[in-house]
Amino acid sequence: MKIRSRLKGGHIRLPWFAGAIGKGGITGCAVACLFYQSPYGLLLLPVCITVAILKEKKRKERAEAEREQQLFSEYLSFLREALQVGYSLEQAVGEAKKGMLTTYKGEEHFLVSVTHMQHKMKLGLAVEAAFSEMAEESSCEDIRDFSEVLFIAKRTGGAVQRVIAGTERIIRDKQETLRYIRSALHSREYEVKVMKGMPFAMLLYLNLFMADFLQPLYHNAFGVCVMSAVLAAYFILCSLADRIVSVTL
Image 1 (cartoon, rainbow, N blue to C red):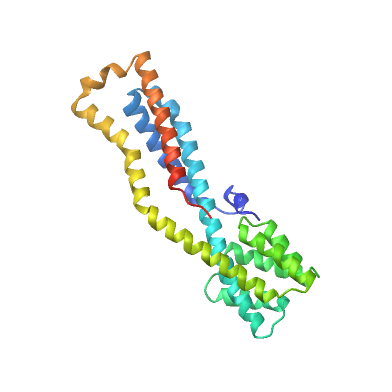
Image 2 (spheres, rainbow, N blue to C red):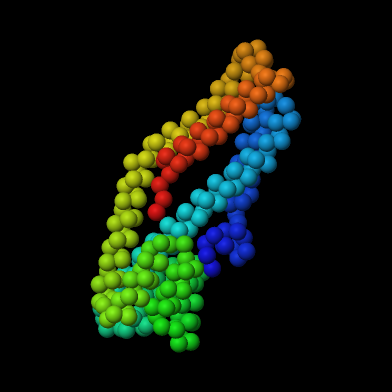
């Protein structure tokens, strides 16, 4: 099953869902209190909760995809070793899974997919076709690329071990590059988080110590329009900042 379908809640629980609702609820209440000082500001609460859920869902999908890529890289390593000691590719599929089970639990989504692939092979499906079907159900681009190259190698009599070693090397290079970029952007991510909280901190400070300064912006049509425009600009800038510091596979 695809990662996105799993995240929709059909097959696994969503422990992050309550946390996302909590974050969205806190943000909505802060907006109502600091930007509008009116219970009518709570009308934006569903919007804040929806945005928080969508952001958390996207983060979970990205984490799942990276986890699947990592497991696939390790699986290829076991697969290559099994081929080197003389197993056929069909046999190496099972031997590589046994190697993975020494470190990971069988409930891992990737290993469940490998188990399904084994069942299909026992029913007579060719190993390259089984990898292709697994790739169709995966969100990992590397699995799809590998299945296509493997299909060509098997049909044309190419060196399967070389294909596996090359794919493994490419994935590891991508992971190293990703870690390096994220390390370089770590301080920027922290700065973005601080900047996101600054408008709320400034409004809180002004409301506590200089309430008269902001009074013309509350409880009148002009103030509502100004605060709404500021709020809209704030959310747009937050979205742009997230995209700038976001690093994906």
